[in-house]
Length: 286
Image 1 (cartoon, rainbow, N blue to C red):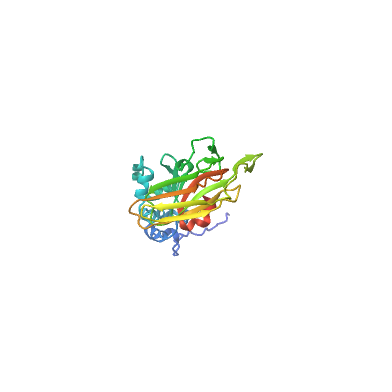
Image 2: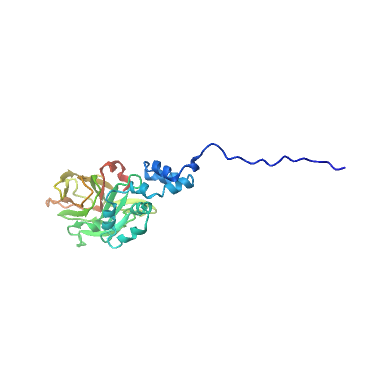
């Protein structure tokens, strides 16, 4: 006589009455994350499908882009500005966060990923340097320490003058200009960085004058001695303010030491940095 086993009837699992993040409508999620910083939005996109979809909403990313982002695209991508017509605002933001080259590769501009502020770097090739074509005074040297892969190196000269200018649709805000310079020529020896200071001289006799001016009448002048050798230093040339994002502003900047009573040399000129004024504490990243 066999044994009879009775099995319990299958019980249906009722849906949980407690809502969770995945139940939120994408439109509601998008309205909330639109108040966050771009990096935070990208992190939340990993939570679930609702957050991933909301993080792609055009109105979320348009609020992060500069007001004049279309002017920026037209200036930086002059020959290929139409590429943005097929991109969503998130992809436009991502493209502008790259270091985009323009003006023949002599300049790079990008959005800071965290704040969406405009940052710009002008290479030594984008500057007017007195005597740059005379190999007795200047030479172009390759280096991994520049985002442009080369710097201008001064061996010796009497009249030192470096000038530059840029006309650009900067978004409204306050900006600072810095010259990225180094006394001495760096290279690697047995895998270690060493700096040759053989030609460094003359910078302790008279100060260098930094100047800037803008097309709307702003001006700044600073003087300082170049003293520290062997590392890249950002020398502050001055600040300017852009009051409106609706039009371009022309900015001129220069660095001079034209006292011809003595020679000066041993200086590497890498670039000019134009950064939001509040970035002064982050210069090591540029």
